Length: 177
Image (cartoon, rainbow, N blue to C red; front, side, top):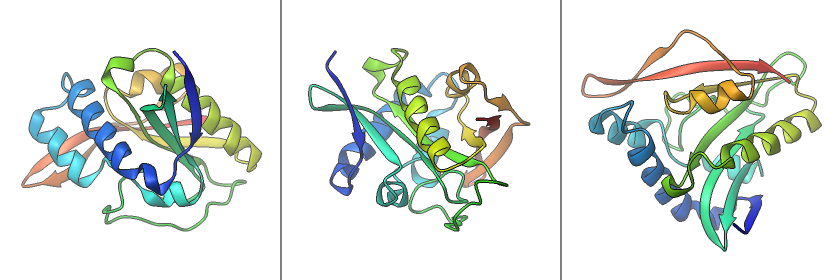
Protein backbone atom coordinates (compact mmCIF):
# COMPACT_ATOMS: atom_id res chain seq x y z
CA UNK A 1 0.00 0.00 0.00
CA UNK A 2 1.08 3.55 -0.72
CA UNK A 3 -0.56 5.42 2.18
CA UNK A 4 -0.84 9.17 2.59
CA UNK A 5 -2.43 10.86 5.60
CA UNK A 6 -3.49 14.47 5.24
CA UNK A 7 -5.91 17.02 6.63
CA UNK A 8 -9.31 16.78 5.01
CA UNK A 9 -10.61 19.73 2.99
CA UNK A 10 -14.15 20.81 2.20
CA UNK A 11 -13.49 19.54 -1.32
CA UNK A 12 -13.28 16.01 0.20
CA UNK A 13 -16.78 16.12 1.74
CA UNK A 14 -18.67 14.19 -1.00
CA UNK A 15 -16.06 11.42 -1.00
CA UNK A 16 -15.99 11.30 2.82
CA UNK A 17 -19.78 11.04 2.92
CA UNK A 18 -19.68 8.15 0.44
CA UNK A 19 -16.99 6.41 2.51
CA UNK A 20 -18.97 6.84 5.75
CA UNK A 21 -22.07 5.28 4.16
CA UNK A 22 -20.12 2.39 2.67
CA UNK A 23 -18.25 1.75 5.92
CA UNK A 24 -21.34 1.94 8.13
CA UNK A 25 -23.46 -0.31 5.93
CA UNK A 26 -20.84 -3.04 5.68
CA UNK A 27 -18.85 -2.92 8.93
CA UNK A 28 -21.81 -2.27 11.27
CA UNK A 29 -24.16 -4.87 9.82
CA UNK A 30 -23.33 -7.51 12.44
CA UNK A 31 -24.17 -5.14 15.33
CA UNK A 32 -27.01 -2.99 14.03
CA UNK A 33 -30.08 -3.55 11.87
CA UNK A 34 -30.36 -2.00 8.40
CA UNK A 35 -32.95 0.42 9.80
CA UNK A 36 -30.61 1.51 12.60
CA UNK A 37 -27.73 2.03 10.18
CA UNK A 38 -29.81 4.11 7.77
CA UNK A 39 -31.29 6.09 10.66
CA UNK A 40 -27.83 6.76 12.12
CA UNK A 41 -26.54 7.89 8.73
CA UNK A 42 -29.24 10.57 8.77
CA UNK A 43 -29.10 11.54 12.44
CA UNK A 44 -25.70 10.73 13.97
CA UNK A 45 -23.09 9.64 11.44
CA UNK A 46 -21.78 11.80 8.67
CA UNK A 47 -19.51 14.71 8.00
CA UNK A 48 -19.11 17.46 10.59
CA UNK A 49 -17.60 20.24 8.49
CA UNK A 50 -16.58 22.12 11.65
CA UNK A 51 -13.86 19.48 12.15
CA UNK A 52 -12.57 20.13 8.64
CA UNK A 53 -12.65 23.90 9.12
CA UNK A 54 -10.78 23.47 12.43
CA UNK A 55 -8.16 21.37 10.55
CA UNK A 56 -8.71 18.46 12.93
CA UNK A 57 -10.09 15.89 10.49
CA UNK A 58 -7.90 13.58 8.43
CA UNK A 59 -8.16 11.28 5.47
CA UNK A 60 -5.93 8.38 4.55
CA UNK A 61 -5.46 7.68 0.88
CA UNK A 62 -3.99 4.68 -0.91
CA UNK A 63 -2.83 5.63 -4.41
CA UNK A 64 -5.08 8.73 -4.28
CA UNK A 65 -8.16 6.70 -3.25
CA UNK A 66 -9.74 7.76 0.06
CA UNK A 67 -9.80 4.68 2.31
CA UNK A 68 -10.21 6.03 5.86
CA UNK A 69 -11.17 9.17 7.74
CA UNK A 70 -11.29 10.35 11.32
CA UNK A 71 -10.34 13.18 13.60
CA UNK A 72 -10.49 14.92 16.92
CA UNK A 73 -11.97 18.12 18.24
CA UNK A 74 -11.27 20.84 20.77
CA UNK A 75 -15.00 21.68 20.84
CA UNK A 76 -17.75 20.37 23.14
CA UNK A 77 -19.76 18.44 20.51
CA UNK A 78 -19.05 14.76 21.17
CA UNK A 79 -20.41 13.23 17.96
CA UNK A 80 -22.74 13.82 15.06
CA UNK A 81 -22.87 15.37 11.64
CA UNK A 82 -23.70 18.91 10.51
CA UNK A 83 -27.39 18.21 11.20
CA UNK A 84 -26.91 17.15 14.84
CA UNK A 85 -29.35 19.14 16.95
CA UNK A 86 -27.32 18.90 20.16
CA UNK A 87 -24.24 20.66 18.77
CA UNK A 88 -22.25 22.80 21.17
CA UNK A 89 -19.34 24.37 19.34
CA UNK A 90 -17.83 26.05 22.41
CA UNK A 91 -14.08 25.57 22.74
CA UNK A 92 -12.96 23.16 25.47
CA UNK A 93 -10.59 23.99 28.32
CA UNK A 94 -7.72 21.48 27.91
CA UNK A 95 -6.91 21.59 31.64
CA UNK A 96 -10.37 20.49 32.78
CA UNK A 97 -12.03 18.91 29.72
CA UNK A 98 -11.26 16.03 27.37
CA UNK A 99 -10.63 16.44 23.66
CA UNK A 100 -13.11 14.52 21.51
CA UNK A 101 -12.21 11.69 19.12
CA UNK A 102 -14.58 11.96 16.18
CA UNK A 103 -15.98 10.04 13.23
CA UNK A 104 -13.54 7.24 12.40
CA UNK A 105 -14.60 5.29 9.30
CA UNK A 106 -12.68 2.85 7.10
CA UNK A 107 -13.44 1.55 3.63
CA UNK A 108 -14.55 -2.08 4.18
CA UNK A 109 -11.85 -3.59 1.95
CA UNK A 110 -9.23 -1.95 4.19
CA UNK A 111 -10.77 -2.77 7.58
CA UNK A 112 -8.55 -4.22 10.30
CA UNK A 113 -5.32 -3.21 8.60
CA UNK A 114 -4.22 -0.58 11.13
CA UNK A 115 -5.75 2.51 9.54
CA UNK A 116 -7.80 3.36 12.64
CA UNK A 117 -4.62 3.15 14.71
CA UNK A 118 -2.80 5.49 12.32
CA UNK A 119 -5.63 8.01 12.70
CA UNK A 120 -5.69 7.56 16.49
CA UNK A 121 -1.96 8.26 16.82
CA UNK A 122 -2.36 11.41 14.69
CA UNK A 123 -5.26 12.62 16.85
CA UNK A 124 -3.46 11.85 20.12
CA UNK A 125 -0.40 13.77 18.96
CA UNK A 126 -2.49 16.79 17.94
CA UNK A 127 -4.50 16.79 21.20
CA UNK A 128 -1.31 16.58 23.29
CA UNK A 129 0.16 19.49 21.32
CA UNK A 130 -2.92 21.53 22.33
CA UNK A 131 -2.28 20.58 26.02
CA UNK A 132 -5.17 18.15 26.46
CA UNK A 133 -4.75 15.54 29.21
CA UNK A 134 -7.66 13.27 28.28
CA UNK A 135 -9.75 12.03 25.37
CA UNK A 136 -13.35 10.93 25.12
CA UNK A 137 -15.59 9.62 22.37
CA UNK A 138 -18.92 8.05 21.56
CA UNK A 139 -18.24 4.64 20.05
CA UNK A 140 -20.29 2.41 17.83
CA UNK A 141 -20.48 -1.22 18.90
CA UNK A 142 -18.01 -2.39 16.21
CA UNK A 143 -15.69 0.58 16.83
CA UNK A 144 -15.28 -0.14 20.54
CA UNK A 145 -12.68 -2.86 19.88
CA UNK A 146 -10.30 -0.35 18.25
CA UNK A 147 -10.74 2.16 21.06
CA UNK A 148 -10.21 -0.47 23.78
CA UNK A 149 -6.89 -1.39 22.12
CA UNK A 150 -5.91 2.27 22.51
CA UNK A 151 -6.66 2.31 26.22
CA UNK A 152 -10.18 3.75 26.22
CA UNK A 153 -12.43 2.61 29.06
CA UNK A 154 -16.07 1.93 28.22
CA UNK A 155 -18.79 3.64 30.24
CA UNK A 156 -22.43 2.51 30.42
CA UNK A 157 -23.90 2.09 26.91
CA UNK A 158 -26.59 4.57 25.90
CA UNK A 159 -29.55 4.34 23.56
CA UNK A 160 -29.46 7.27 21.16
CA UNK A 161 -32.84 8.13 19.61
CA UNK A 162 -32.85 8.21 15.80
CA UNK A 163 -36.40 8.52 14.47
CA UNK A 164 -39.80 6.80 14.52
CA UNK A 165 -39.21 5.02 17.85
CA UNK A 166 -35.86 3.76 16.57
CA UNK A 167 -32.67 4.04 18.60
CA UNK A 168 -29.09 2.84 18.37
CA UNK A 169 -26.65 1.72 21.07
CA UNK A 170 -23.49 3.76 21.52
CA UNK A 171 -20.73 3.37 24.09
CA UNK A 172 -19.21 6.46 25.73
CA UNK A 173 -15.47 5.89 26.27
CA UNK A 174 -12.68 7.83 27.98
CA UNK A 175 -8.95 7.71 28.59
CA UNK A 176 -6.08 9.81 29.89
CA UNK A 177 -3.39 10.96 27.48
